[in-house]
Amino acid sequence: MTDALMLLSFGDNGWGDQIARGTLVTVSLALASLPLGLVVGFLVALAKTSSEASMRAAANIYTTLFRGLPELLTLFLVYYGVQLLLNELVRQFDPSANVDVNAFVAGMVALSLVFSSYASEAFLSAFRGIKQGQYEGGYALGLSKGQTMWLVIAPQLIRLALPALGNLWLILLKETALVSVIGLEDLLRWSGVAARVTKEPFLFFGTACLIYLALSIISSAGLSRIDAWSRRGEVPR
Amino acid sequence: MSVNTLAPIAARKPPPAPERGWTGTRIAGHVLMALWIVSGAVLLLYLANNVMSPFVQRYWSQYLEGAVVTIELVALSMVLGALLSLPIALARSSRNPILSGLAYGYVYLFRGTPLLAQLFLIYYGLGSFRGFFSDIGLWWFFRDAWYCAIFSFTLNTAAYQAEILRGAVQNIDKGQWEAASSLGLGKGVTFFRIILPQALIVALRPYGNELVLMIKGSAIVSIITIFDLMGHTRRSFSRSYDFQAYIWAAVLYLMMVEGLRRIWDRLEARLTRHLKRSA
Image 1 (tube, chains in turn orange, purple):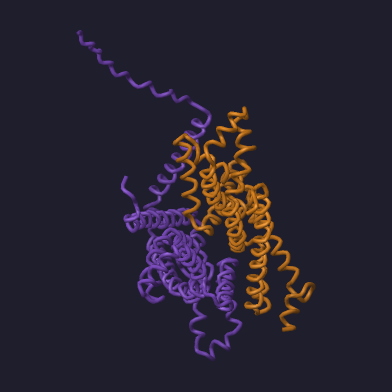
Image 2 (cartoon, rainbow over the protein chains, first blue to last red; image 1 turned 60 degrees about the vertical axis):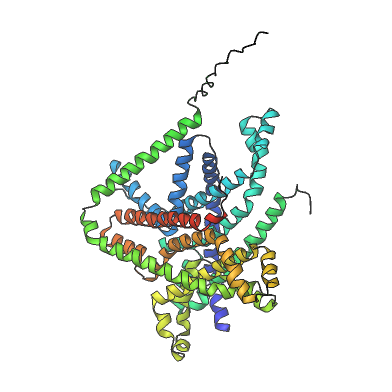
């Protein structure tokens, strides 16, 4: 027991500071993918509600593609594919050049692609929950299309989409574990290194699982507060 | 008395459909669609050019083997997970606080942590207790990557399936229970013959989603040295450094997932045909 505590302690003897740094990388990767995924997801959902058939078809292809591919494969496609493409491009100008794609950026892009395709479905079903009269009411008051969307629709949309988006956030947090495979030093990566060095795999992978669990619990608590905030205008029942 | 004959009114032509102008969205939609079509055509051309390439000649049989391994893994752990999910779902909705607390803890643990971390915990982590498992004669099981993968996937999907099942059973109207008990049916018979069949229809869609998630999630077993589709992909890429390795894998995964989704939609339409009102 004391051995385990010593191995997990901060400082020279323990792995505590490495694991803490890994946790920070995990959380910041998830936080960095979130805004991009939300914005793209919203735009794709807008395209899906468009009256223009070609727009809807283009958006549906996007969703089918990134919901159908395994997340790990998307990650490899982005990481190696972009690297190859960039190298091809750069060698047009300078044959000796070599580009390395940052694992963090590749992970961020891949996770945002996957997140946005799921988020677009969440936004789409939220759009369907808003009555046509809300748009008409906005236009009748003389608001422009953009103002109606921003001032009338968006606040309701957030409230309706929030439960589904909260679930997607929890999934995103767990999916960040995949980037350890392309060498990003996240929580799982450091746990693996510590497990190999100390020959205590159960201790370190168990700790990693508990930290992921703690992150989920904290997120759930935060999400229910945001949910309560988004419902502050409703009549209490 | 003259008869007032009314001349029949000639039917008028419907007004012409409003002209569809080239609005901004329409142009943008066409441009995006054109981009997809061009990239799809480039992809098809690329694949067609490479169908007879040395890479495909050398590795296609391994890709097929890998796909079979992926399907085996998913099918086996889905079925085992379904069996395991039944007692968990029952415990979760039981009135005994200890039982439901334990089931809740199980579900929360497996849904709150990444599948990859669970896989590592079981495959590498249980090695810490090698002596113990050797003593009870189970070390052969936890030493093998394939068994460990099936074990951790089963535990993981059981947690998700238990929640699907519980949600579906709770969704069934209480009147069904009451009607069955007023007919003198026992609790067990009521559950298996009355409630479960109705619940499974409600659960059909989430089960399909879980199956798709499992196919996609199964790609991570390639990290613990199992040669599923992803495993063969990674090996052939590291040997040839040819990017088409990943392209072919993407095509195969997309075909599996989309095919499954289509089949599942058909199945759902077929099984719920008695619920549809004819228009």
